[in-house]
Length: 257
Length: 272
Image (cartoon, rainbow over all chains, first blue to last red; front, side, top):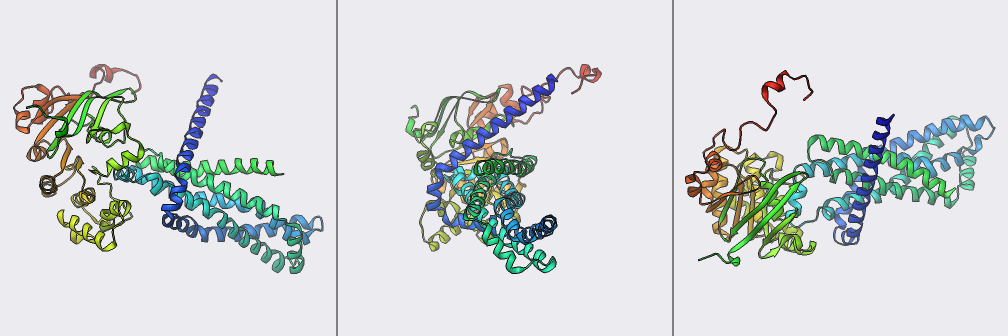
């Protein structure tokens, strides 16, 4: 019991220290943000491509399947209450408010987050970041911030695409397979989805984008400069993002409802 | 006549630095004369690379001072520190080439970051520097296509592309075949003289360093244990200097890392 308590306290202390380090790191990059937006625009655009465009296929395929499953499960559940006409509204609300931002953030962490963490970690392990510092080039401005911003900008765009493809998936299952009327599907969707529902999703996607990108660059930048250290950093980037996204999702939802 | 402060580009005075509980430097003082090739030698793990990181301001001393061009490195603002670093070139032990860029772009990197030179001029400067290290023909190769010696030379071209006043070499001979080693030795001397710069070579390769250095420091146990020309160091009677300069396996730096009694440890049932 005492051992368990001691381990728990040690683990809690480590978590708090990490949280403090992440916060300090965020402050460090936030102070450089305006300068980077002016002087490093090309790098930011390149990283939007790296983080966003290369994740596109994964996001679209996943969104389509999530939408189709939503169509099947939604139809099955709604038909128990003779409410299958609401399938369009149900799928749109589920995707806009929850599934879109959360699933996209988790996929982003697995696809782009790992790539960012391992790339920066490898640069750390092979002295490339130190070389930049000695060349009077700030690695936070040249390497870290463009990747961070690339992720933050990409996330809402990826979520929008995920939602659009997801609704298409639900439509195909609901209308073409299950026989829901196409007009009813769209009219129910339009009648029940407010602007607030859409902005809630956009807000969440921005917050998740900041969290996922910050954790990826932080883990890469602060990793132990060894092969094992880079591997650990990559794993930690995914695990920490998954936990943070789900926690933040709960906090934002409880604040907005 | 005593050297004046202006004769030295780097002045390290009574430096103290620790990593955790381990004392790396304790009262270390080193002066690097302008225009010289100065070697800083010492057994592995004596903090030679750490000293370079202290000189470039990547680390701050616990006590003592480090001056480069008469300015205290650890008291400079970030802007001034970066301005100072533009006058310093550094060759890393692992070369530290940017793996996503080819040789040309690696060498062009500092120029693109710090100057607004037209593309044509950048091209010519980069080709000039690559020619100086004998790799003009390798401009479009990627770093993973280079041998260790070639990578070291590309990194050297990159280190001199902004025409620094001070060039720092971290173990420039480590892991090189004899031909590459000879090339690097020649480059260190010829670049130092041709570009009128000051070079600091961190190394534990006694033979190669002796052929290129004007002045050498031998550091051990966190301080300078001997200094002078390579010939003067070789002639010293001190046990540690003799062991290092003549490559003796045992001596003041013991062959065995400190450990409990051999017999007792083998017979004991304790975990490691």
